[in-house]
Image (tube, rainbow, N blue to C red; front, side, top):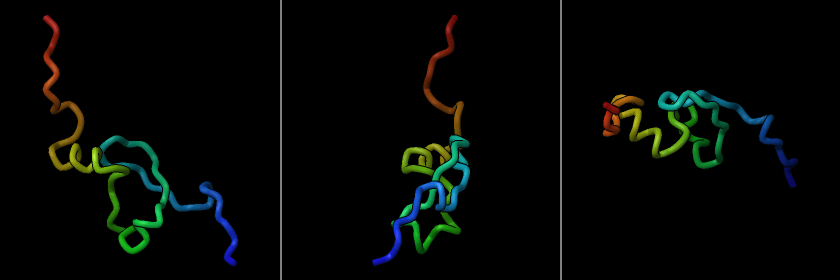
Length: 60
């Protein structure tokens, strides 16, 4: 049986949308080089231009 790895031993990247670090996941094993976003939410936000494009009204 293979040894278990600690999460700190796995490779990490910085999310292109939110800027937070995220770690390797088994489901990304084949596509790790192409992974840019930490979640589906960030992937959708990144494709639309990133933060600051939401519909929040400005006070005033």
